[in-house]
Length: 187
Image 1 (cartoon, helix red, strand yellow):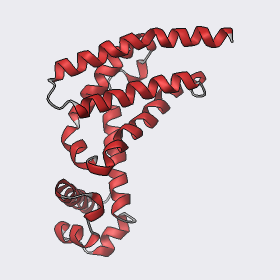
Image 2 (tube, helix red, strand yellow):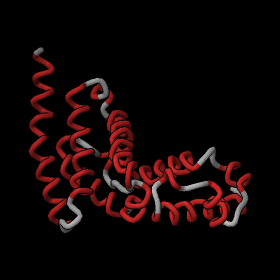
Image 3 (cartoon, one colour):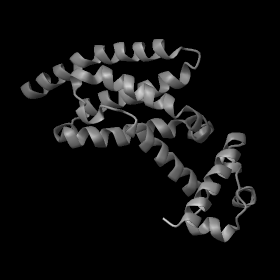
Image 4 (cartoon, helix red, strand yellow):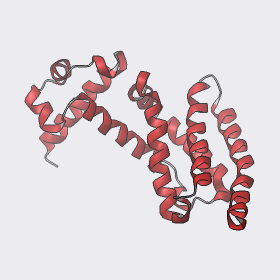
C-alpha cells in the first residue's frame, strides 16, 4: 500500500479514536474528524462511505485482532473449552483500551455479537456438522457472549478470578455437549 494512503488512514483512525473516546458515534461528524486528522472531506470519502463505515471497519479489525490473539483456536475441542475460554478472556484484555472506546454506549453489544459470529465460523470450519445443530449454537453463544458480558460487567474483578471463574463455568457445560450428542443420536 502507498505510504501516503497508509498515513492518511492512520490519521483518520487516530482522529476517530480521539473523538470516539469523548462522544457517542452518532455525535461525530465527518467535518470535525477531517479537521482533527488534517485532511479534507473528499479524502475521508475516498476511504470510507461515512462515519459508520469507518466505525464498522475498526470494529471488524478489533474482532480479528482478538480472534488472532487466541493462541490455540485451531486446536479447539470440547475437551479444551476451558483453555479456549481463558484465551478468549485474555484476548479481550489485550485489546481493552480500544474495546472500551469502540464498543461503548449503544455499540457495547456489537463486540459480543461479532465475536459470536466470527468464532462460530472458525469452529464450524473444524466441525461443520455443528453449524446446523441448534444446541451447539446455543452453547457456543452462551460461552462466547457469557465470557464477554461477565468480563464487561465485572470490571472490579481481578484477572485471575475472572478467568478462573469463566474456565470453571465452561468446564461445567462440557457434559451438556456430550449429552447433546447422545440425545441427538437417539432421537
